[in-house]
Image (tube, rainbow, N blue to C red):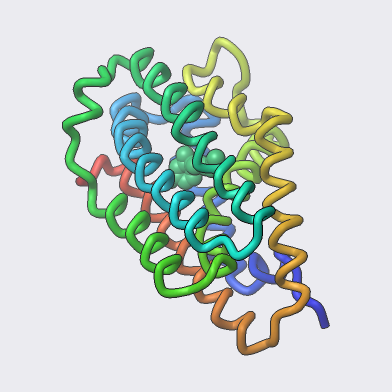
Length: 222
Ligand SMILES: Cc1ncc(C[n+]2csc(CCO)c2C)c(N)n1
């Protein structure tokens, strides 16, 4: 039976659910999240994005074909040239200067997650690395869709976190997410059940580290 991305999610259903529907996400959606928790999350997310840019750099290095190489290069370019600039501007709106961002220490949850992804990519091949990156890419898109399906989610000017939801529900982001799922589905269709077990361990580890990242924001831990 050919494996699909959906099988990775099903292999750690409880963890995936705990990540998508985390209290941080629910509080952000009903505007009850403490601004300090969101600011802490934004600061750590800046550090996270820098390490994720390195992970896309590693994907460039690990690419066996020109088409993979181009895709990884586009991912690296998107984070470095677009997302980090947007993030810096968004942080400024929340009272966090670029100078402050440049001098932040990494929280343990940030260290654990980002170095896990980089180590997984270093040890393994491009598929291992993409699977380690996929909870980040697919999870945030699913979160936006889930939030929009809930009656409790406050949209528009009455929610200070509205722009965050808008970013991940955008067609541009949802398309990038679908293209990542397609890439994974093509590769997963050919793997053995032993290989799938290895990949589902990576997927579940990365999902648990996403849960810890939300928890780090909520408790403002370092
Ligand atoms: C902890 C954490 N997890 C996921 C994302 C979302 N995200 C970060 S990089 C990237 C790929 C984009 O090119 C996506 C979707 C985040 N910001 N912070």
